[in-house]
Amino acid sequence: NFVHDLTVDPKGMDIVIIEDIIDSGKTVRFLKEHLTRRGANSIKVAALVKKQTESSHPELQPDYFGLE
Image 1 (cartoon, helix red, strand yellow):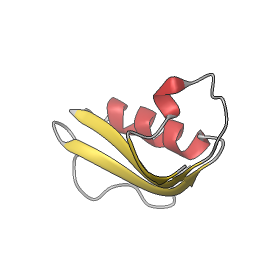
Image 2 (image 1 turned 180 degrees about the vertical axis):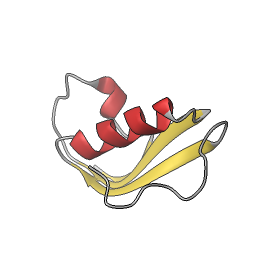
Image 3 (image 1 turned 90 degrees about the horizontal axis):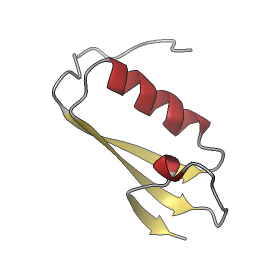
Image 4 (image 1 turned 180 degrees about the horizontal axis):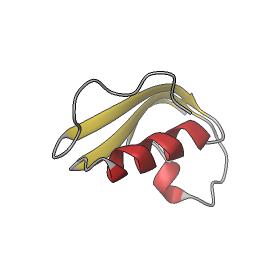
């Protein structure tokens, strides 16, 4: 749940979510679903560290990452 939601309408925007480490992917999944519902045009994920795990959810893999 959000404590404070966005102050701008993401409808039609191209958004990049920046994470330090993607572990379980729960935060990324929640944010992508929320922003999609709010009408974002596209959503990409950038992470500093991509953990070496086999994910059954390829949509949760970062589009950009610094270290693997």
